[in-house]
Image 1 (spheres, rainbow, N blue to C red):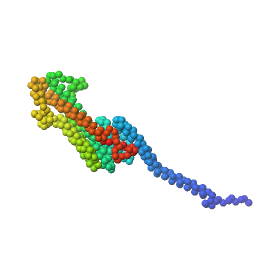
Image 2: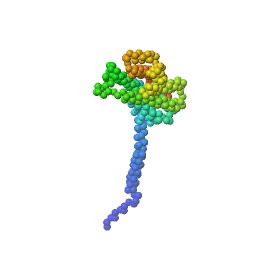
Image 3: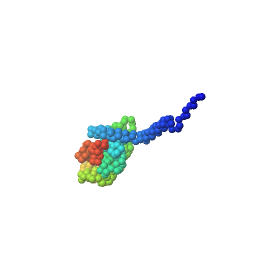
Image 4: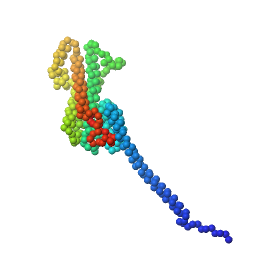
Length: 349
């Protein structure tokens, strides 16, 4: 008689624990994978933030060193790299980069300075009035420097126009003249005095608008809401007066307004209220035929422009000295920001 095989183990026998253990392991693995996928972006963001914060202070130190050394364009580039690093106070990088660009007084850098400081002002909406006043002041100074740059270019163009008109008048009078003035490239194409006069008009208008914008920015309410010392209030009033005078200078220097100045006795071209001795010189010159009326007018215009150039240079020197006496040459740290956060706050220059 053959042996009967043993029956299979009932459900829940020795094989069941192994299957349940495998299922539990798979469930734990799925949970771990889910948690990893959920938390990985957060961990990555924290790591990136930590790296950024760690690099803020060294980057600011490099920028500060360039700023102190007078390499303002290099400092602006280094400060600009902090735009994506400083997530806590994002306005600082734009303010520092804009201030450094403005200090360079480079024509192209001034555009970047204005853009950066304007951006800083908008990002600092929730900051204290003192912080916004500092940004406001530097933005106004950047517009003023841009106006100075435009005014200087306009004056150079005005000198060129005066030389061209004097050469044309001399040629018409049969007198010696410099041919290079009329044909600077020697290709037979003479300078168009009307086009040159329009260039002078345009650049003086650019300067006038820049000064007007600088004055408007000075009038924003933030500095009035901040705590200012009597000396700072005096400096602000002097800045407004200076901007108004520069606007007037740019406006009066425009060729379109030159004809109306004689009525006020400012140029001495129309009447008896000009500079002493000019009427006698004109009478002598016209009496002996040595100079035409056009030449005399151009000579007076050039003298006036030279005087304005000299006054502008003297004013610029006084302003620079005032800035140095009040604020110093080095970028400061300001009152609100902390030195160690990688966001040095250069003083208003």
